[in-house]
Length: 561
Image (cartoon, rainbow, N blue to C red; front, side, top):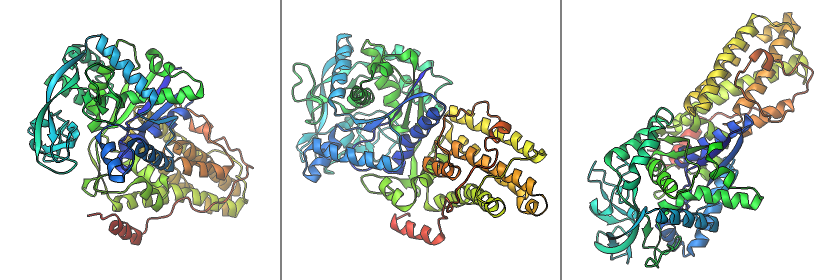
């Protein structure tokens, strides 16, 4: 069986994650990992925090902390928030670990020995007011290509063009805001991407029709423009020291060691378990590697990181499928960690259960375009889909059954055309759900899931068990038996997206999660699992509506414009 390696982009450790971070990489990766585990696949889901670079140094200085301790503090807070959203990492770590240092040096030495590393005197932005060379991303100004006024010195997030800080118009320090920027000479090491262009072009071409368009076209755009040599060292204190004579006092560029962190986190995690990390990262023919990330991270993962691995001379596991996402906006503007704009993960779960947010985000995942989050949209979806469709179905089945049969599942009697038509409908819808989940088309998968819930409501409305109970109790029992079997079906289908709600649904029936592959689903046999006589537990409604009063309260609280 092919091993399923899943990695989600590593958010910077400084500050706390918001809903945009969650849907941009973490939540879809978790849903997919849970889906594959449910099918019985051998899954390793790897995540963590990106800990090197100036953001950590600046954040630590603001809080008067040692930078390593600062990273430990925020790493723990990140993990706490991801736990609150039931993100089911198999391995969770940080990029500043000894394991990642060992692997970064290993890949660097391979690149160096193979002639892909060169030395170069460069001109770099120096902030006299900050008293330091500024990392590329800490020089901000106007993009010379698209005119975006908040472009960073390494890349414009609007047009995704790679930049050099010296190209920016009206550059300023992102730390102090000072425009007192000098360009000074300094010596650095560069990865010779031009030497790898032909090889990378052949490799990227094998992904045509396999990768989503956003990933493939972004990589092709980079290649078409012609790859440029890329600096992999910086004049900073916090990072892995460069193991090469003449480069004392310099560290590796965060974008060099951060993606290697996927491997480092795996190594640290599996070493502690007495397992072999090489089975996942040096066994490419037996591993399918799926990466999840926002569109701003795609260029580095389609060109820069693969080039580092391929140039090292070892046969590393490379990305098989890269699922890229556009941005989630907040009320028409950007979520912002620095400006504290939007809803952050700890705030979200304090307002409503994690599964409410998980469902909304996956049902509205920004797969083809940027998606806009508003509190009105959130409330409308929760009220309509979760409360009125799924929750209403469960409540009706439980209450009618308790009233007419007590707290045991009624027996399944004669199957009629009402049931066979339901089976036909479900066979089509579940097949669509499986197709879309396998293809990582999450919005379509969630739309199919909702239609599966709707099919149950339509069945109850059509068969009218409340009327049948007055004239034909056996027929009412068959209808409600089908309803209980639908609750089991819905619970198992919901497990990847809403694990807590799904478990509550299974608890009603006294069942536990199980391994099930819905490929080749046959409703007639699946909906015969509960024969009748099994005890069930009455429960409070699984969902609560978001009231108009709460909507207005949340708009004020989170400053939704």
